[in-house]
Image (cartoon, rainbow, N blue to C red; front, side, top):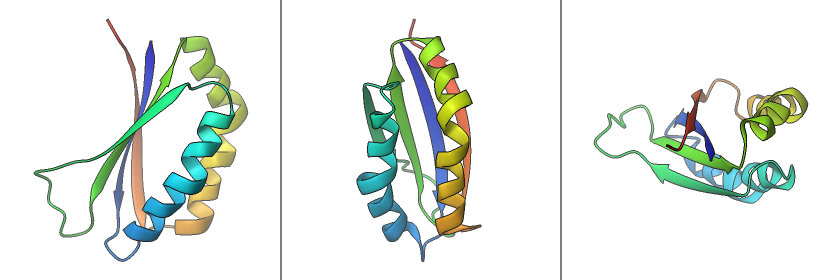
Length: 100
């Protein structure tokens, strides 16, 4: 199994709107690609939240091929939508893991 992990720090004044958007629009869009079969969203604890909370969203895929298809066919449009809505009010980085 492949886990596509996205870690996001969201500005305090934006995070509730961002969280609602993630739950109602972004995550459903990710799952509708058919390339991920499940997800888990967590808020990191024991972090400096003075500039906003930090979240991780893990998307689960059956294969690295599915992940690569996501990158080539869907990632840029979904990423751009986040920047269009929230601009510089968040920062994100991605990692890819394989369950062993």
